[in-house]
Figure 1: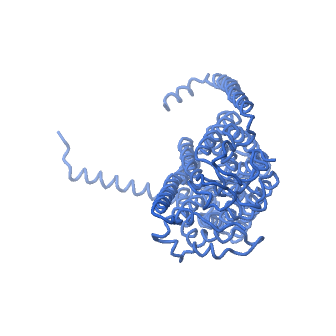
Figure 2 (figure 1 turned 90 degrees about the vertical axis):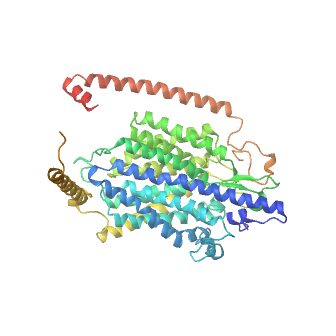
Figure 3 (figure 1 turned 60 degrees about the vertical axis):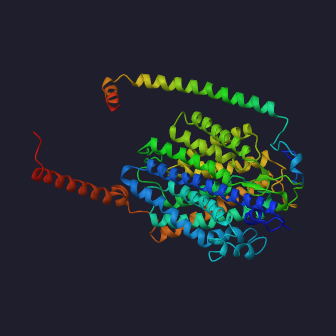
Length: 475
Length: 72
């Protein structure tokens, strides 16, 4: 039986004397500040996604594209406060291997004292926010692929579902020290190849299959046309910002410092350590090595496989990190680089094959960069980390290729593709999924653009009239 | 069998060092990394040479070149 612990307990445990008390206070404040810093850095992921989407869209759709993504922030935040965070604590064994963990969930309900200003709990707020930023990312991944033809109202429903329901269910199952996937499958996904990227890629694939391509994307014979971004430079800087935020995400996936006593698993001795989300040991140095080497492997492979295409090179850097993320707590840096490179080649080839075969218009390549890379990364980790412990707790399955493969199917298809496809089908049947064809042709910003031109012309005329009537020209 | 050398975390972390997979294969991995890096340069040199040749052959229309210059 796994000891019921969480970070609040680890950071707030009180010593029996003053020295222990001060040490625990310092640990608490350090942990609180550590997560707070990662949250601020992760905000850049969303800035990057906004730049990326707007850069990829055409001029007549800029503002709607931006607003569609920006409003993900409040909608996912509110819903994640109301019920998303509770799901993480209540669902680790539910429904297949036990009931809801109402005791752990109770401390994370919106009416709990822990979910508010509370001097006895300095950790829940920052830990909640770190997970919330992951939720924004999951929703943002979906947002990019569907630009220029989805209704914002439809996308925002998907954002809440992926951001505050489906990804957090998979986190409870496969990204929680007591999750059933970790316990029985040995599922290992330290930096979220599957729990964020595969699920979001699968989800958006389901939506895209119902939504359909933008007008003109495919020639009459089915050959896909490239719809070039209006501003490739902006798009690339957007991905740079995503890299930066992703680095913060890596740090946020760790527990920065914890003692074996507080973990309460099989680890003996008194050496404190950083751990991954499963409370198994790793170091910040390890993930710094591996983040940069998998980024580099991805960039290098993407450059040659795409023949220097900027969009795919930048996306390949991201895909390289995503592919290696499942095992980047343990990989050697060279392994991380090669895994990232190999993943990118597979992802690039698969994207173009699927696009042509199934006529999918994925505007930012998110199904490939996040979905395929996540799945490939999970399976690779199963082979490279074969037999390694998934958890510090006794009785858990070790990491295996089949455990990882089953986990990849659960992430991509069961919690990703199926809900996305079903909800999009319902929206399509209700006529609330796609914008009218006339609006797609004239552009979503048509009214705003015309109002802008009219207002600009009016104020120029007014100033000219004022100049003529009041201002005496200089000699 | 475990690729990282530990089948469980029932250990004292004070006694634990490297925990990456395939310890003992560092030199082989380094050779693989060097091959990957040098192969990248080789492929990139060839690709860029082809691209430059294609671009050179397209740059015969002086009107288009002038437009490109004016676009800055």
